[in-house]
Image (cartoon, one colour):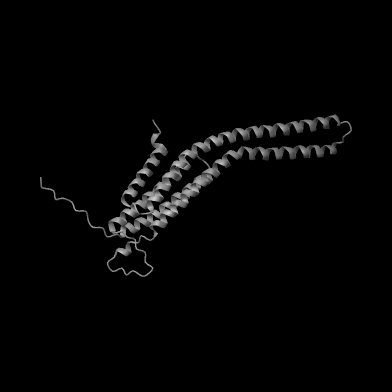
Length: 246
C-alpha cells in the first residue's frame, strides 16, 4: 500500500501557501497581510530546498566524522601498543607497582579517545539540529507577526454603540471584511504549523520534535483567540432562494 498520504508533501504545502497569498492579495491588495503571506511562501520554499541541502551536508559531515573517529581510534591503539611494548621490554627491571602509571595512562587514553569518538559521531546530528532549529525559529517569529496583524482587529469596534477615542485604531473593515481578514490569519497560522512539521519530517531528534510541538501549540492558541473574535461578529444571515415544493 502506498504511503503517499502518510507524509506531508512540500510541493503541496508550497502550492497551498501560494494560493492563499493570491487570495489575500486579491481581497486585500493594500493590506500588509499579503506581504506576510509572501514571506511565508518564501519560508516554505526554503524549508524544502534547505532540507535537501542539509541532508547532503549531513552526509558529508558523517563521512568526515567517521574518518576522524577512525584516525582517533587508530592513533590511540597505536599509542597503547607502543606503550605496552616498551613496558614489556622493560619488564625484567620493573616491579609490579611500577606498572601502575602505565595502566593509568592506558585507561586515560582510552577514556579520552572514547569521548573524542562520541563527540565526532554526534557532530552531523548537531549540525542538522542547529539548521532545523534556525528555520523553526523563523517560523515561530512569523507566527507572532501574523498575530500582531490581527491584534487590533477587534469586532467590538463594529458595534453601533462603540465610542472611539483619540487613540482608537481605525481598522477600515466592515463585518464581512473583518471576518475574511481574521479567517486568512487563521489559515496563515495553520500553514506556519504545517511548515514547522515539514522541518521535522525526517527528524527523530527530541529537541527538534519538541520545538515543532511548541510552534504548533503557539499557532493553535493564536488561532483559537482569532476564532473567538470571528464568533462575536454579527454577520448577516446568508439568504437562500426558496425551494418549490415537489
